[in-house]
Length: 461
Picture 1 (cartoon, rainbow, N blue to C red):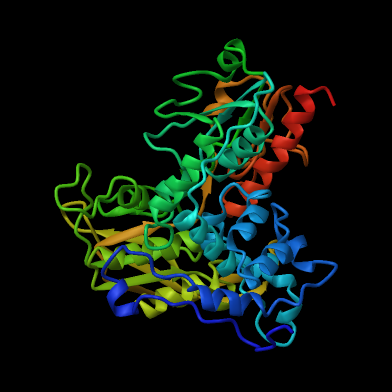
Picture 2 (picture 1 turned 90 degrees about the vertical axis):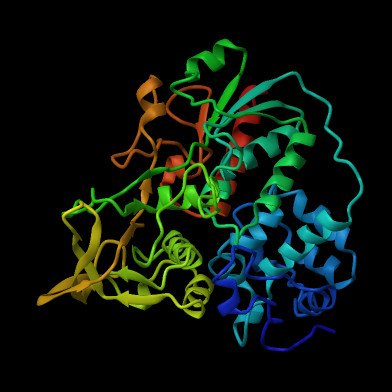
């Protein structure tokens, strides 16, 4: 009989007043008993409504049944057939707006904790599996992947399982893309990402780091080297700014730079090669998950006051509800319905404040959200020494500028069809390089779809 309790099993977590001073993982994962109990809440719907919300189409009821029965390795096998990064997705995917949104149990209570169960299964596999991953027989075809973020890793994993010789070219000195440089350790431990990458290497995937496609090598040179198709999953790493006075002051960062220094360069450690300045009072401009990450990192760097400045109301915050809740628990102050108009500096060209204007919500705009409207004569100043701009990113134009025949959108995203095919034969693309900044799982779904297209293209189907 199903477990008909209305709420999810709670997720164990560090105490907020302890975790906001360290970079250790916030949530601790389900113990076995809680995982089995949570899995028993699943009704095993025959039409599997939850699957429609999964961009990589995991057979969710099948893996949950295996968890309920204590067959944890069998549950992992079900997930691994569809997903190359289950331990990552179980931690950072917005399940509440994807698979869990369609869960029948969510009608009269909380949805089954699908993401929590996926994380449990992946972690259990890492801790208990002693079997080696066997590389499949090679089919004699070669594919190049540009970028080792979630789109590139998903595409590589899918093709490698089909016997392709896959080489990933990564611009940075470590693989993982945004999973390594963008998402903080306390949300996604880097050992987890590395373990997922190591699994792909065991499948035969080769990863070459410190290779900037468009500088070190051109895409045309990859074809000349014998690659039959190229997948571009280079992400969206070009930060946006508001173009307000003071953005060039010392103490103003893009969220990309701030998080990369912390996550990849470990700038918070004593003696770091690329240290970050000591922060005391910080304003983070924006309301997405990246803004939450930057604000929570600033708190962990020792900031006494951290503000999230967002021009709409809390109801319109694009960040996951869980991330907002965690940020509040850790002492982050939300200044919603406020919009920055200038960053103030002292005589040393250093940030000393941010001037904001109060807003109210008008009629919905093209995004469907109510448009923020400035309230006259409502300006005020926040006393801060650091400002982090987190208002979005766009694809780097380097690949387009060095590759003939690639069409891009006005915002710089590579134009593709629904299967990831670009306007240049043999070149496919997916993830943030196409859509602009989005979620890890959507990028993975695009990488997987492109792998299907590449397979059909090379095999003449």
